[in-house]
Length: 290
Length: 179
Image 1 (cartoon, rainbow over the protein chains, first blue to last red):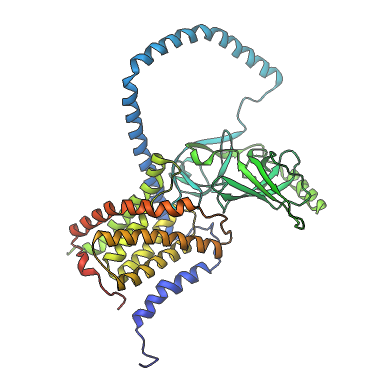
Image 2 (tube, rainbow over the protein chains, first blue to last red):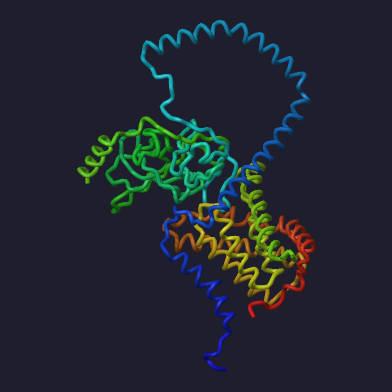
């Protein structure tokens, strides 16, 4: 057989099957950049997840309503008794509320929240088991933008990495692509919290001499103006210092159970981020330590 | 004007089916079973196309599916594409040697493909990605192919029915394919 005789279709198949994908993964593209041709499908993904969520919520709601009807009579009697008791207690509670308002005013407490929040429901999760992302039913139409912080009452959840008109995707703090600037609340040691496994993150870039012990609370540093300062990220569960290394390995258990989330808050505006002067002074002190 | 049913079927109907099944996998499954491992339904659809279409169509659909799936995950497009091409290439090699158009062959190939995807995914993650992953979840590694195998038959029946509606004669589309 002649060496130069080849089937052009096989060559073309080889290019499409092997060479093109290998070229693509070696192109060093920034993974945060979204490709223009995937955008319509990202929108479709959000829309379909919203649709399925509404459908399953409807089914669950109807089933729950039917089950509730079975013992509604008994519960009604119980509730009537409760209502009578609560009415009696209401008078004293109103009095306490008024007193509380008065005292708050005296102490100069701010009643308004320091953050502007948008409540969102979780409607979907990542296609792949190793990536920890969640889809929410709020998007750019409601004011959600890329890189906004996502929290719950217990602590930080992650941040928005993709925002579409009616849905957005959150990169959870346990995802290996996630990185959040963090400090240890007790000793003020600074590091970067990086996702590791489904229920654990790692605090990296810590110096060997930094004071970190098991049980320490890790909070957001407020740098990069994404997260409010001092918000809980998790608790240190393991500290490993090798004999000759320059750093230490610190494992952190997230403050929030990220596997069972149903609702979250997106911070659209925050008022307690460190000021630029504070940020500059923090950076200077960092350099001084080095 | 004659309606190009075959093109419409492959470029519109099948992508819509894929989006619906992936929606079930990523949203409905989550509402139903929480963080329990999911079947990889997109691989089941891709496997159907590999086994019931000529090589060039399954290759093209592999590219189209990779673009569509990027919207459902944080994994970059190029990695999804590489994994999809591994599945198309390896399955084609298998199909050229052993082939049956029945559901048993298809179901076995689905299980193998989901397992191969997890291997490929782990391998790419450890070797090529900037942030390699730390631990392989054996639970996902085992359960995901099993669940995909369990759901492969209903998907197979549905796709066969669609093939009949769109007059896509599955048995004639098989055979050696690159040439």
